[in-house]
Length: 69
Image (cartoon, rainbow, N blue to C red):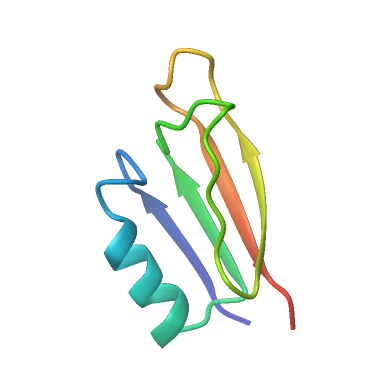
């Protein structure tokens, strides 16, 4: 079982690296802090179920991605 935790400081700024990690390493769990997403933001990752807790002001926020295997 592989788990990765990352304080990403803005998920959109690091989206290419995040896609590379999910494709290359295929972790079972990916725990992301400081996503900076608003509740209206849509973001998905192939083969992952995403659980998020966003803040209204777009700062902070967390996401947990769980591989669907």
